Length: 135
Image 1 (tube, rainbow, N blue to C red):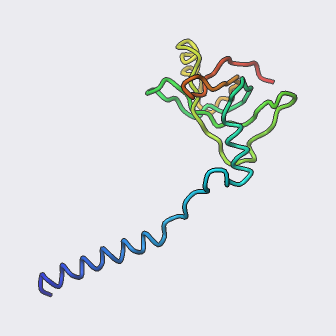
Image 2 (image 1 turned 120 degrees about the horizontal axis):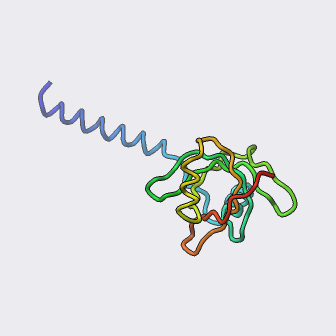
Image 3 (image 1 turned 30 degrees about the vertical axis):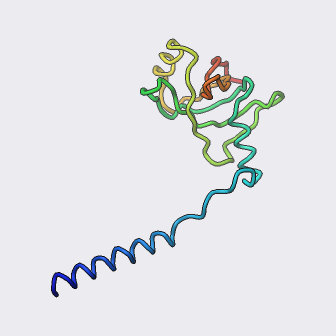
């Protein structure tokens, strides 16, 4: 095969692969305000506009931001604990109140269940206000 035909075959192959990749692209996410109710419920839960008691399992330490990642398992709705484990995994980052609290987190084993009171701070970060006794 001549080099001209090789280049043409390669170019056609690239176009074909690119077309297939575009055709398999996922549909766009839901437009704002049109998410399913389950999504909206989770979004509202994650805002932590007021102090909220939660339980989570320590998943990892974030040394870059001195934070922890937790797998959220329970939330206290003001009258009782609600189990969130039947929902999809809800893992997120929380920042400690201070360096002493981060030292405590570093001493814990991954997978440890921790009871926290969390609230969104002025910068939009989920901040641990206090460590709570198990309920």
